[in-house]
Length: 245
Ligand code: NAP
Image 1: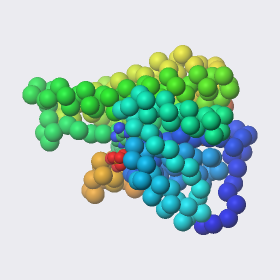
Image 2: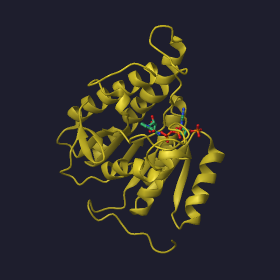
Image 3: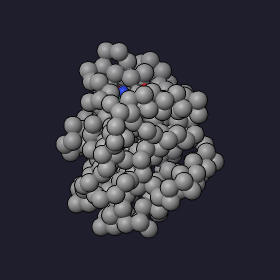
Image 4: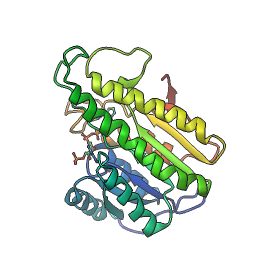
């Protein structure tokens, strides 16, 4: 659908959104939905070529997104990406920490798991978002506006915590805690920080048998990314509703 893109009206500006892991899966769909809402979207990917190919597909739908190389496991890459986006736009209004991995071996349990899998998973799913919020949220605070959206998972909920995929679960619990403490730190300053579970979504991670489409999986993230100023902060959401940590 070509044509003029609508502008963001709810919070009154042409917001700039940075989405990690935007080249495929839920991240790609988040880019699609945010571009459709009129935001200026920076589709970040660790593989520049994959990012450009994804942006080209969106362009074919009439949605213009920019691309940026960003490996969330590399502090140098994170710093360079944030610097490049700020140089281009002077701001980052929305940060979507979407990039993630599930690296646990099939049937993995805490006992017997390789600690290296925990390190790699925490590096990607927790330290990446941590370094990104440390780089981006000060800019948001200075501007008095920001939306941080962390792609978490029901597998990270402490309530009802079960066995299996332990590294992934723990990384998402840590991401939830980061969400809650950062939200407390930024309360009343125009920066809203939330996490969500997208549900079980048909992507490379979720597999073909997953119940939900990427459009359904991305909906709550796009909603949190464009919350009005009096919207919630410090919550974990699924289907736009708050769920227990
Ligand atoms: P996916 O299809 O496996 O896509 C993962 C994305 O993350 C890819 O773009 C991948 O890039 C990127 N990525 C991985 N490591 C990266 C790194 N070091 N730097 C930058 N990008 C990196 O996963 P998905 O299903 O879309 O999941 C997206 C988010 O939703 C994840 O945080 C996941 O934990 C969460 N989630 C998913 C489900 C589900 O059912 N699918 C359920 C709950 C939560 P490459 O293409 O380069 O590998």
